[in-house]
Amino acid sequence: MTDALEGLLDLLDLEQIEEDIFRGLSRPALVPRVFGGQVAAQALVAAGRTVPADRHAHSLHAYFLVAGDPGAPIVYTVDRIRDGRSFTTRRVVAIQHGQPIFHLSASFQTYEEGLDHQAPMPPAPDPDSLPTAEELLPRYEQVIGSPEIVRKLMEAREAVDLRYVDAPPYATAGRPREPRSQVWFRTNGKLGHDSPQLLHVCLATYVSDMTLLDSVLLAHGRGGWVVGDVVGASLDHAMWFHRPFRADEWLLYDQESPSASGGRGLGQARIYTQDGALAITVIQEGVVRVPRA
Image 1 (cartoon, one colour):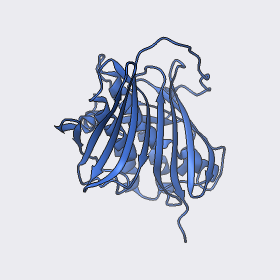
Image 2 (tube, rainbow, N blue to C red):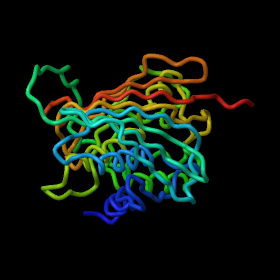
Image 3 (tube, helix red, strand yellow):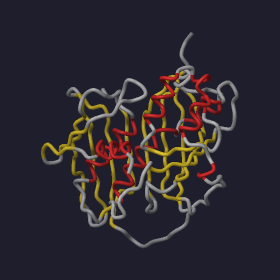
Image 4 (cartoon, rainbow, N blue to C red):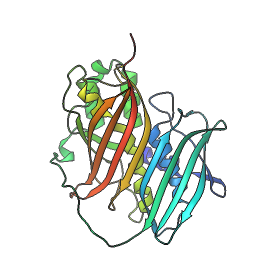
């Protein structure tokens, strides 16, 4: 396990300060606010710690209310909304400086047999044939315009091995293309063989906020905050966990944008295991604004 992955696992290992109350810290972000994937993953950790181990997360729905302060702890309060025979529901509110910054509803279910079908996995190249972040990012240092931003991008993703199938938005700024993007990802290191499924779900939640709105940018030839032609932030985020998976094995994140309007952009995606099982569906809307001259 790499030091970066150990650091991410430490970040998700919340401190319990009272029954149903937890506290988490933040890691340095690329922008002066808490990374949305971090607060969503930590909130799901908090919810999961109040649920019996035989119930697994099957969905989450979250709203980002205000930007989080990366220099201050985040307190997560869990409401035990319902404990049914098959399903458990939890609501989590993340609080900083006495104000809510994020809230999440999560549902957990005992395992059941049932109907089973899925959308087929789209074609994608072998992830091992694609460049790593360490190989890709330095190629675009001139486009990005700052070695410091390149360094921060690499540091932000060093716990995750994330590989673009096609060029990322900042590499093709000014050239609109189909609003679709694919990335392969896995943790940058192996997790324990007996690591709980909740950990893998929380890690996938963390990564899911990294690239989902890329497809919105691609449709308009925008490079994003990296090149300064777009200002953006997550508004809401929803995930459905269909089948078991491991976050330390390759997952294909197949993303597209069906709409952008009113200063907002919508991304939707499916996440597949390398052997073709549909593991997760994700939908996210974010603020996507063009800065005024």
